[in-house]
Image (tube, rainbow, N blue to C red; front, top):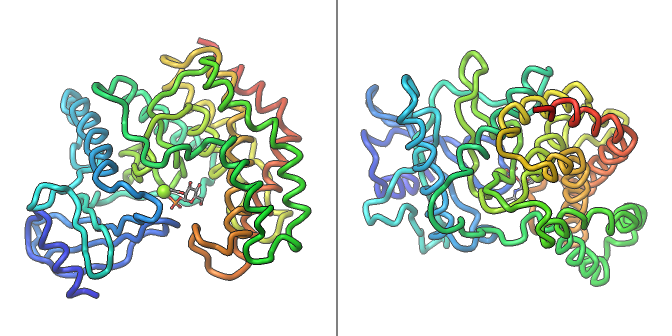
Length: 367
Ligand code: GN1
Ligand code: MG
């Protein structure tokens, strides 16, 4: 593998001499390596195999990421003392200028970034301050991209958070029952189907022009926020899903993922609840940045967004389970079902706390 990776690395415009490559991080979709160079003064790199079964248009994806990072960099250049190597991702171009390498023998696409040194991220939040930081990071990100010039970004994953469409696909999957798993999950299917009308609301509001489409991140896990040694925000990473969408997707997914009292796949459902301190932190941090550009109608979608994204994630995990696990990386056969149940439990807990969740948004939305 190392020999193969070296050949890939050589097709990028890197500095220094290849030393080694190690698997890095724990994303569910792309495979990532940290590439080290021999020289002290040469940078290290982050090399990724792009999952092109999911991100089908690699050239457009590459272009989106370049536009987004160039725009952020141009803003940072005006900020005295900004660290351009750490406060934004730096895609590394290829010698042929395409920005990615297609490895024909393996039918794989590769891309590279500068490795951001001395950064850390957390899979789980442990206090309200971290939640404030997470909310701020994604609020800032949306704000920085709110004036991206030119044509809209390419919709790399069209309808990624189109709940209406996710529900329709889910119904078809249930009807097909391709691997005979439906009988095990009828209760979960019923729970989700009972709520399907409620969760079509955001897509409808968008269609009716009540809320605007903006550039949003769409995968706002706290571990996509890089922090420095003092836990100050460096930048937001994992830019594959950055595309037009609604703001509640970002804050909603951040809360779904970050304000859970346990892990996304904890089999012990008693451990799973919404942590209201972390919820408050996310809302407070996010609104401290986003209040400048949000409309009243958008503000009213924020608490709902947390429920929506949790609902949608449950649908997505269960859909994949019924389909025989073709999408998410799994560690054991029941993994997607365990994940589904954990999301359903989290959603139930949000339903119980929903009034309080709305009141918190009202409190921090006062301009
Ligand atoms: C995937 O690969 P990762 O962990 O960043 C998924 C997200 C899900 C998440 C659930 C492109 O993200 O939408 O919320 O798993 N990304 C894609 O853990 O489908
Ligand atoms: Mg991701």
